[in-house]
Image (tube, rainbow, N blue to C red; front, side, top):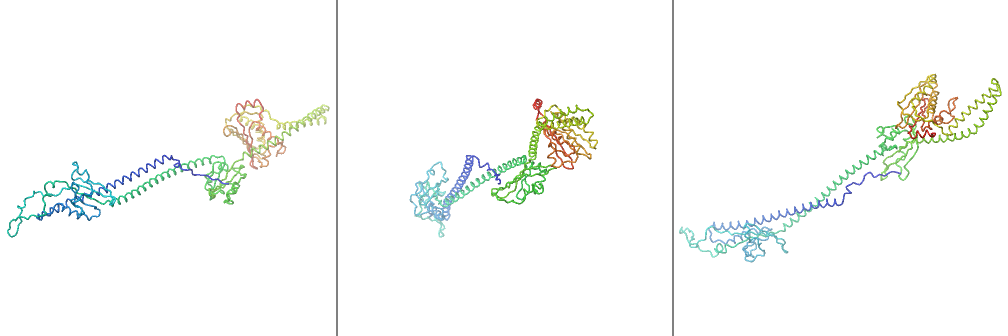
Length: 628
């Protein structure tokens, strides 16, 4: 048989409301989703801005490149120049090498293509639609407007638009006749021949005032791939954050649960320690190495060994020999299916007195049936055994009393007849005659036998007590004075140690005096070679009793003799009647008290008389009826 104890309770965080857990999880998910969406929007803005910057750069390159090409032709003095849109086309042709450019185009307000990265589309109507906001008067001509177009064939295209202002010369055009060309021959100017491809109506007139727009189409596949990759990364980062958050919450919950478990365990250990310390049963526990780990107050009180002197040591070093056998290595690893509890009654000697213990041994094993140690439970049954012994003694005394009452009743009537006859015979003879002396002796013997029968009858029926307040210190001093002469003749000193003031007890003064004198005389008679008789009186434990201790330094008694000293007519002294201690015990018992005797051969005897302090109701009751 072994104990299995659950030492660790379930953590309290397991019992948290599910609504609270759902709210915490929802808040964490909301934070993570908000973070992910914010990051995705920020990345989209950054990438869109990058596309806008690239489109803006391409537009500026087209505008600047066309103007630079146009001015370069003018600086070379070649007035047979190409139209401005040809310069734009030339710049566009140079920029189409970029693989991310889907198209570059220059269109007029009606959507007709003036220049295009695909030359074959020049002069045709554009496939893209110009934004209406581009034609608004509230929009600055330098403002870039973009849109995202999704096509089934080509996917998504980023389209950007901006107004385009062609480059125009600062000076107005002059007639051809005023233009001459320097020649080395005449050193003068000659008229320039007109170039049939030069069309000034493109630079001036109504057509020169119409609006043009540059359009840039960028491939968004790289953008989409990057955005998908960013979304995946942000998703992974969000999941990681979510996992970290959940892990952190679980960690905090685990730490809180651990703290609660430790606090609960500490409370359980404190409660268990207090319970073990306060139990009236002695508890001695050892670990698997055979070292003492538990030694409570009851064990220290019963065995007379402090816990500090026993903890951490082997049982054989601190326990009496009779208890060491319980912790022997034999049977240490018994099978759990067998009966591991062993119970035995042990008698040990502690501080010079015998202590009777009921011992119960338990092998402690864990849930895997591994040996963990032993626990020995000690129950002090010394007083219980003494009470059992006293009960058996009282039963014997009662039996003797009943027998004595029957015998006395049968003997007393014939004795009365014998006494009457003896008195009659004594009166028949002269007082100096031998017959008169024999009759007188017969009367005396009959009276002595009658007294003996009266003493026997005192065991058979309760004595009538004349209760009154008695001061024990006065009674003890009086008894000591009565035996002082006998004690002094034998060289015995009497020492009185009386606590003053002693509580007043309700008792029969004459009978208590008889008890004290009888016990003191027994003590004096046991000290044939002189000695000391010590008499002490004090209040009992709890203030409910008064204790009187009479101790001598005489020859003492062995255990066998002590078990019979209160039997009627048992005596070890020559000439003794053996009735004194029996009567004393009866008187003390009639007062509701108790008498104990302790003795060792050669070391004297100690008699303790314990008398109760009666309440007022009990006192009145004892005045009305005899106390048993």
